[in-house]
Length: 181
Length: 452
Ligand SMILES: [Zn+2]
Ligand SMILES: [Zn+2]
Image 1 (cartoon, each protein chain N blue to C red):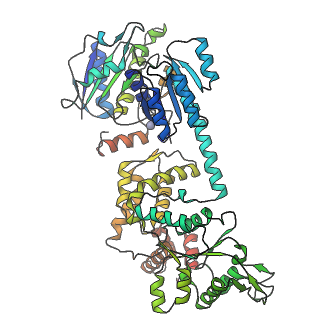
Image 2: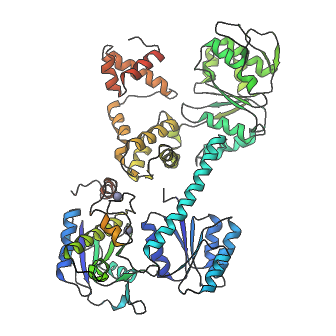
Image 3: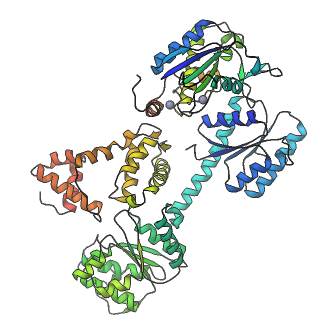
């Protein structure tokens, strides 16, 4: 299993590096840096001054298999779906594509001093969660599991950055019982 | 179980509709979509949804409010959430007046939506729980409770409907665990005797004299232990139905008594001289080959023909494998509820194990297997591991064949006998091999009258 990582819009290199590092550590997959998606205007909703995550996913889908089996986009853009004020990330359930946004994971967004370590942990949780969706996982009822739904930062900070046994079992089954540590 | 609750998202805008549906699917719900009010109503006509998200402004004749009004004509209390991009007090008031469950302005906070959905589903769950509880309390098993899409079973259901209001005797044949009693109940409770008693007697469980008094009652002092006068099951089932399970096991004396009561509709209590008249419908069941018993001379042919007026043969589970996923999921739902454990489904891998298994104990064995898996699992979805006992058992068996028609009790007796022989009568060792504790094994040795 190989996961392609795409930097969307302007974003510091170290965050794309961190995404690759977390994917290797959590899933044991190999990763590959795909060409960045520099121009994001296509997804901009001017009235909301936000970017449509659905349109971003659509664009990422064109980069997918067979080159890599999953594509994860990472962006600083504040992303949304029309029904909701924002999303931390979005993925195709049981599909190949996911996108995560750092915008609302940053302390600065809420007028607080920045905290790179906290941001990295939050990003890891959102990343693992969205990738979990691509393996067909739906939200978990275990409050500490990374697959529990978090609609705000309190909930995101309260959960762990790992799958519970049940979700892990489902992922293993999905991967055909290959142990990826 | 979330996935059994379906949500309908109605919006003319593609991205809006599909992203909302995707977001709800990630939460574990089954989500359908419609791009017009008309399409929504078409879908709703086929099935009720737990929750409807309906956009207020839609082109094509019917807007959100009208859609809701039409939905209300289809179902008594649909949970309709009206969604709009522009908050105006007027439309909000109108939506609520027309009976919207909620009125939301998009975009909303993710938290708001997730709480709203949770609230609605909780109410739906409660409603369903009450319904299940009611069903259980009345114990009125209509055949809707017998789950099957198998052709043969469908024919049986049809036959059950046709004969339910007749007085004719019914003979139900099938292996242990195929649900003979459920069919008997279905016949009784779908017929015009439904509000009269349905009385069950297992003929194999009792010694001859006890069974006789159980069926026909006794007068005071008619035999040792007959303290007072007692009504028998035939009397208790007057105007209703008596279900005689394991009829193949009764003695020749009782065969004669039964023949008499079926022919004459009269009998005497044990030790009594008063002739008692009853109007009781007889449904008998057996896992034995009665025709063979008749040929062998161990079962009266006249009684056999009296019982066999209407014959129902229930196929074993291995001949209706298409029902296994259906039944298994139904047991997961029921049992997880009963034992209070949040187990939601069975994985595809686990289902494959169930489909490959031969089920000598039929539906009952499947039910027991699902229960065992639910009790021992630590996951929300039953995975292959949860059913490893089925696979392991198969490996150890090494071609050990179970004759069709053998009951689980016979199997248990056999397993205990063989194990006790192997351990040379060491109960402690035998109990550990059998995976039960010593006192249970003692009880079973006593029950089966086995030499130690
Ligand atoms: Zn999620
Ligand atoms: Zn989990």
